[in-house]
Length: 231
Image (cartoon, rainbow, N blue to C red; front, top):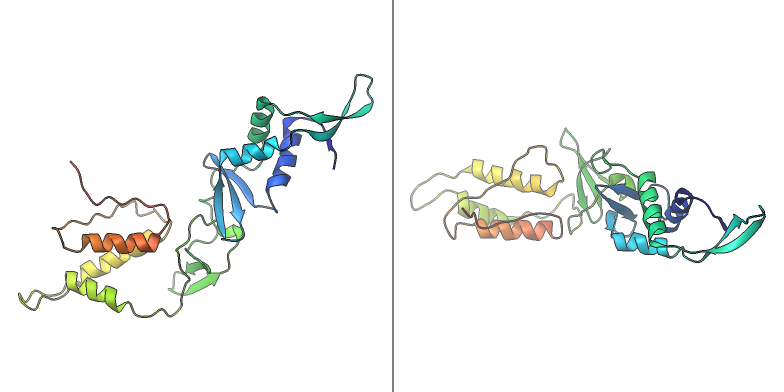
């Protein structure tokens, strides 16, 4: 297919068609290009090198232009560094959306088998993966409506904050509930609470176990863990 030689805008339109497989599958936000991957259901960041390489592939394309006499002629389009910069910049402007991952219609937990939306009445709906979900991370397992009872985990929690038979100290269900609330909050992309959880306690009091469980659940999701509080 021949391309009419024109501005960087026209070349950027062609590049956009080359690297996106359908409508609304490529966006420029937060200073980077993101493409929707149907295989995973995620919006994955495209490296600058990937985008620029696609622009470079347009080098040598057969294009139509006008010669000095005003006649149509065909030439090989040669791309230089300035062309690539201009084309990539124009394409970014075409698909820019600074609030792309903020203005989301449905919010929930991303699982391997879909997006789980938790409604205000406590009911849930599992939606199939779609680019409109705008997910960048997934929990590394399927959602199960009726999962098995986490007996070993609850035993661990009871050992930390359960009743002490020897001292007669009563259980502290508030700490157990708060821990589960924190863990549930960390599973989401929500930051509206503007809080950072901090676990304080002596050595061998369960902090490391809680950290390891959280790391295992979150897997590759972007998260920061610091087990040492330095002065």
